[in-house]
Length: 291
Image (cartoon, rainbow, N blue to C red):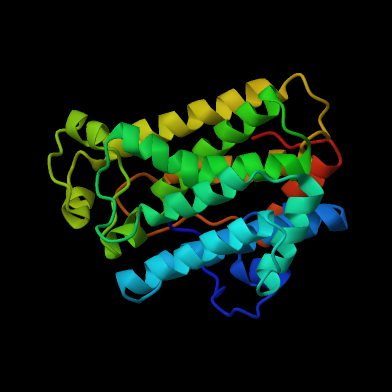
């Protein structure tokens, strides 16, 4: 899983510091939350960063498996009343207690990261792709919805829809970066429909059929954004304002990816700090801007 760059490997780093230095699109929506919610969101974000870095950074497979296993044990211990180790685990323990975060979703995030261990994911089947998105993004959505609001069928469906849309946008944004480390998350069925039988990332990115694949995946992401919109329609505009801001920021990224096209994929569209802040404040006030 590719996420925005941050050095979260320092075991003494605090969650707020990790989020602040990351350049994450989500920083402003997290920052403007009330302090308990802000701290919980920083904890969840820092946990995801740390387990992601375990897989992405240099090291042997055995070392990485051991590090993920250590996080599994830390999660298990937190739910049994054990003492947390390090600032991220301390903050996560507080978030678990305060917002009743489900253990299974934290473990699902680790399971998703583990899918990139050993042989990198390359043109996974659509079923495997959906499992991956559910673990690395849907699980996060089901955690943060408890911080933002509460867990009920509609809010959980919203969280899963947004998670899918954000992860698909990430994949489209990071095609070249992922290819450099041997990964290709584009589903095999979409490649075959576009006449691409290769699974080597560099070869796929050079193929003239790439644009068709990316357009199809962008359509899938947009459909999940539309589903999230449908669920939001009946709620007050300030309800889930932070999630709404996160969704709007990523939807703009998807729009700009499509406008840029799929030839010069090394040019990643970026939102300015002022744009991120403006969208976030508008959502906080219950006046979200037009897409």
